[in-house]
Image (tube, rainbow over all chains, first blue to last red; front, side, top):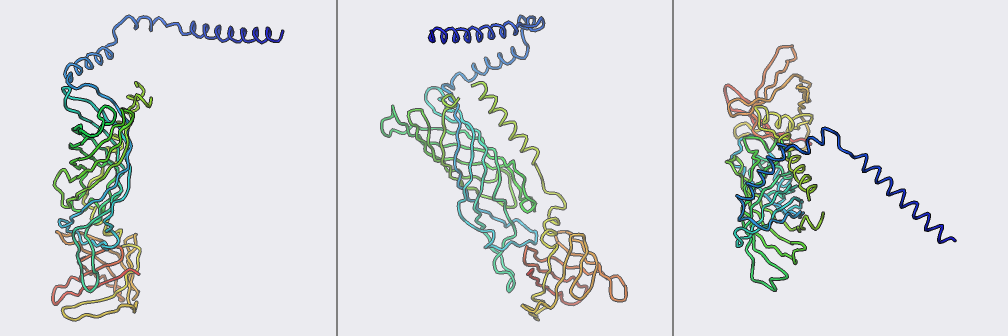
Length: 261
Length: 140
């Protein structure tokens, strides 16, 4: 008797849910305007479809593009040459010079693919939070008063956006059908998006654009994830009164987006 | 995946927007702004004065100090008050001080700024004749 009641209750509940769903579906009937637009070509969508088609035709040799998300630890140090600064400002050398690698972080996405079924590449876009140790190349003194000082104080905490194009060379190491090791090389470009301090702007020293040469190694674990270590050597893209050389080590991991979402 | 692409585009647009909004450049007052920020609201104690080969040391004596306030006024331990401005004339950074003497007459003193920092200040008094005196101050 109890079982029959339970069954009937479940049946009633199921029936209620189905009828509610059915009523919801009927409530979603299209308006006259929506019905009309469904038959008409949407010019925006049509244009987008054409662009996609033409891009697919143009980039027919770029295949197997996988989108991955990545995050990494960034260890940075910058060499600063303040010889071009004429402003009579002093910063005590020992308070501004650390000459260490400080840690920051970055995250972004990358597209890995193969060009003409032969050349592996990775294109990436990242946002970096850089915290750099400073190494000032020049020391000045005003004896007997100031022993060591610099004329310039560089920003050592800043945010950049980074675009990179890397060539990946598969290395004949280990069982290549399971684990893949790559050597990576290529250029990248950084643009500072955080506010530059007045101290860094003096005498035209405040450059935002940095061009890098990247070198690294990557380990692909059966396509599940990629572990990598990259070294980036960056310099000011345009001439500056204070040339800065930015050294960065990136250690991170990327995971395919389709595995995450 | 469609949502992911939307998310990526949104993140890209946001970072670009942030970058454009935060753009700042060097202006005519950048250098004087930095020097002013280092100079103001501190007591600068005279440690040395050097005129030619003659060096006088006042280290540890705290005999004379001068203060440059953020509102553009200045006062020293001798009771002299006035106003000041930091200017860059040609390539030379200068401190222009307008004082009033004890009998009420206005007096302008100009110093070349040799070096200014958070704790050290070196000035050279501009003179029309004779040897200029260099003044070495510490902010204690």
